Length: 189
Ligand code: UP5
Ligand code: MG
Image (cartoon, rainbow, N blue to C red; front, top):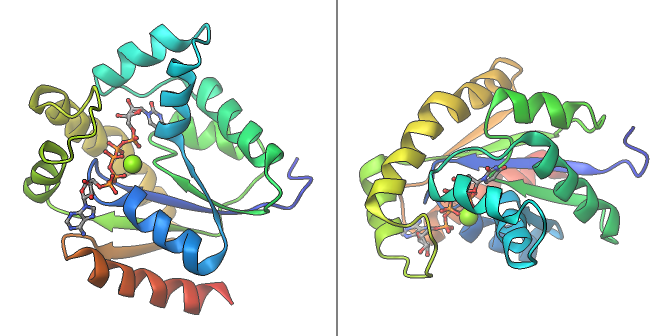
């Protein structure tokens, strides 16, 4: 059960749509704590946990790590935080993820969806240069396929509940943030 009464916003969008970039801006202006599921999984690899090798292989293939692993990491991060407002970035990525998170009793307030063309996202990922294992053209193509096949249905599900705030994420960072800000100002207080 959601004992601490957490406020959660899911931040979704394709690989390279700008989730991490915009979450950093939201944290600064609206007092949320940013939890990137991908960052938590990459930290798990680095820490040498027993699941590390499995996670590493799945990320390299653009596949979605089993929900029990990811949900546990997210729950732990929320419980360890002093904050009660969270941006959950890059999760849930499929129906299994969504169902597993629902079992925690936490219902997201809304879903921020960064919509961007694959052409633009590919350009961004190939020029990111942060040494990510999955920023090569072969893995990027796989990530795009998984996004369309498994993650878009989750966004459609929340859309059918009237919970999706869609943003044109192909624009420059400042313009995207202006749209984000309008949503948080309106929806959030
Ligand atoms: N950039 C950002 N915004 C821009 C803009 N408006 N104009 C021009 N450039 C812009 O941005 C990407 C790059 O683009 C950066 O260089 C940025 O400066 C620039 P970023 O903000 O990092 O985009 P983001 O959407 O966060 O891209 P990311 O690559 O992190 O998205 P993914 O969803 O692919 O990655 P994530 O870390 O969430 O997941 C990685 C893998 O982990 C998954 O493929 C999967 O294998 C695994 N995973 C799970 O299994 N389960 C999970 O729940 C989560 C992840
Ligand atoms: Mg990211």
